[in-house]
Length: 172
Image (cartoon, rainbow, N blue to C red; front, side):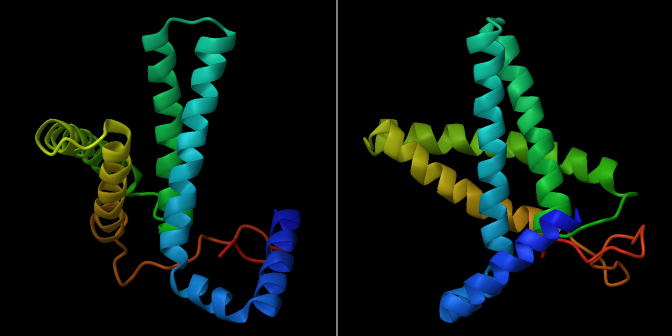
């Protein structure tokens, strides 16, 4: 972890020195940027493992898709909980995971409803409609995760329990 922290702080110092206005804006929108990065990372995991399972290993498509989705879901949950929203409560993981799954099913239904309406009623090209729907569901998910799933109570801390005296902090 010290190497990652070192690289992160070097990047942060370079970025703030060369583009101070952009850096200040990014600092204000840090959780939104992290949310997008975490979601993109989960999407990449989904595609990579789908390719590995189905494309390389030649496993059946439904099995490959399901396993890739499960792995990407775990990556998404972990990054959103611990990194984006900095929620380190270990006791709440089961409840948060159930809420996260329930929200995923709500999102899946919203996706279907909005896609049906956009494509069949408004005659929007299906790929463009999916991009718009994903953006809308992304906004919805951000607020659900921030204020419901990973909401912190006033007595909770922002940092994980330090395990070593040599820790230099986490990637803010």
